[in-house]
Image (tube, rainbow, N blue to C red; front, side, top):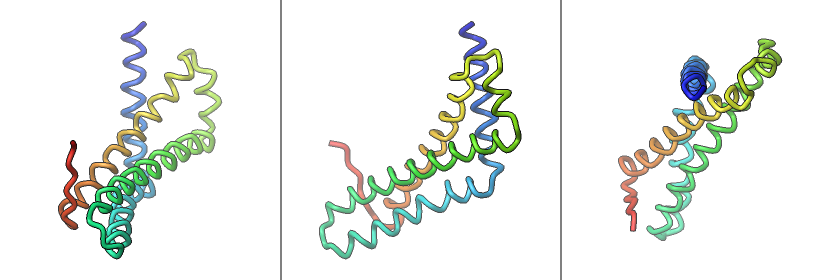
Length: 134
């Protein structure tokens, strides 16, 4: 039973991740928006004059990238299932519905993790923001 559930989760995650990477909107959202958020936050906080605020701006833009990528991609994944007419079939499937929805969340969380990493890396490489863990 656990092996079957793990297989459903893994294959569902892989399918959703491939589906999201085929969508030009989701790909553009995941690649450009985090960089846009980081750049805007940098210019806003650079005008303020406090260098410590840049770390918080970088973290804030990373969270905005995660939230945007995750919420938009998950919503569009469910909407896509509705358009294809397969959402009803997924609800009626013999597999528990949480095992059907969880891969969507995991795939969007994977993209959100990329958004966070790319935002922090962009801030470090382009703007020289040092993120220290104390």
